[in-house]
Image (tube, helix red, strand yellow):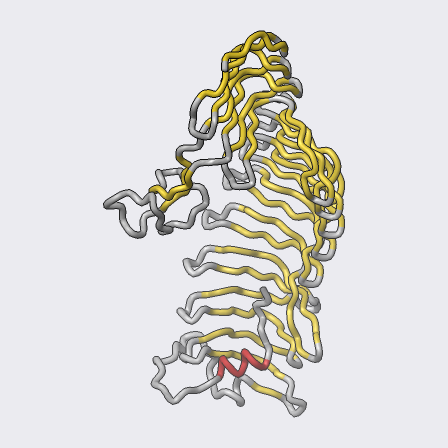
Length: 372
């Protein structure tokens, strides 16, 4: 944000008058004398010289500072319309650098850094340059970043409220480049990405709580490509996923519980995998059943916008109560168990009315008997 705004539009706004009655202006920090004679002076060339002020339409002071040949010099103070200080900018003598401090409405310091005083199209303005620091209301450093001519350029670090590192990386003229790392409040890694010209390119890792690996793979032009590996909390490989152009082409379950849905959104099956093969209870359902709307429970919901009505609304529920979609009466299709990728034990099969149509008994992939 450029705090030294010397553009004609804002100057016109700050000095505009109105036919409506205005509050009495706060002149406590105005310079003595007459405007145009003792302050707000321009020379024969129309260049600003000496002490200048600008005010809001209600007469409150907007800024106070000094100029030499229309270039800001010395100490500038900017105010909110409430009269509280917005920022202070101190221009260093014989230098293009100015130190700046920005304040919140409550008076606490929010940012500090440096401006570079430059001339653009004949007008003096100021760009962020060098290191800038953001602080919270308890004066704790939360962000440290670097600028070159008002553009992020160089290392950037952010911090948790407890002071531990949250994220670190580098910008090159406004674009992320190189390795970016993220951490949890205890300093354990949460992610590593490689960036080039503002896009993720190269290896990437995402960690679970505690620092264990959650997923890892490659990005190209900001899209996941090739084979990605996901992990369970115990560290075992959960699945192998192949991407092409950012889209999943294949997924090979390895360990843990998995499920699949029909295009209708109804569940198709749920089962457990071990070492890349089905191993444990398995259940599938017919693509049938009724979707209905029910009041959402605390912490529940399925993305249905609050207030949506439906045939499942509970009598007496408030008209604006949050609702969620629920599937009812979906008939089971089959249920049984797998052992090392083959059917094992008793399997039961059902029609869409829920009636048992047959029962099979398997022994490690070999059908032993069938009851119709």
